[in-house]
Amino acid sequence: MRILVTGGAGFIGSHIVDQYIAAGHEVAVVDNLWQEGGGKQSHLNPQATFYRADITDEATLARIFTEIKPEVVSHHAAQHSVAISIKEPQFDVCVNVLGLLNVLTNCTLVGTGKIIFASSGATYGTPERLPLDEDVPQRPESPYGITKMVAEHYLRYWQQAYGLTYTALRYGNVYGPRQDPSGEAGVIAIFAKRFLSHQAVRIDWDGEQRKDYVYVEDVVRANILALERGHNDIFCIGSGHPVSVNEIYRQLAQITQYEPEIVRAPRRPGDIYLAYFDCSKAARILAWQPTTPFAQGVKATVDYFRE
Image (cartoon, rainbow, N blue to C red; front, side, top):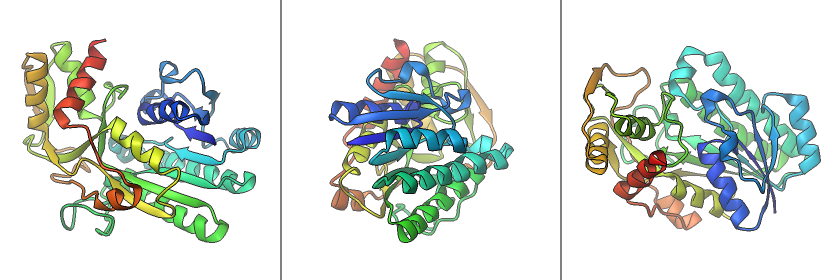
């Protein structure tokens, strides 16, 4: 099928493009290669048709959709940083809400059948109960979490108003090869690069804050299954196990045989102390479950940065 992947030169999006192409699909990529977003020319699959464009550019996006007429859109283009969303909430809304509306409008115009959307565990804020499942109330504590939650409401509305099928995947903390180690998000990539270059690492709070870290290839499999399953539904996609920042430090020290200096810092605004997923709905409906052990995923990430 013809698939358009927005953000397809980015960390998660580029892995999805690779696997869609490997599965025999015809893939086009829209990415503006924004430095803060992690989109890189080197991540692009040469078999994909690439359009360097911004999802907020209405005229250009309309032209691309008219040219491709995608049957499915995988929407991974986003402003993904909590820190940037706090500093620049208007920009966050522009990309994550207005950009999505441009995509949805064009899906309707050209008759796209389905959109697969990258949502986030950040929509929950401090969890009302654990583990997090799809029915836990969403009370986001950052502009980023708010825009991702709003996007889910737009997906439901678009389905009811225009018949566009959707699947939304609420990701945990995705990590793996190609993640940008220079940004403020992605602690495993940031730490891996610093461990390998023998630089100090910053640990916020007490380091015992624990999140659900899910390996990128597991996330990609959910996106492949969502092509045919999970219509008009939302799924938690994570490992199901919380891992602390201190545990990430210990794992990397073991793999690299080096223990860098730790610089202590206060809690970052919008950071949550404990969050992890119950992914049983994804197992039941998508036939998906994570298969990559944490230690194996971290080693693969380190090996990538070593190269």
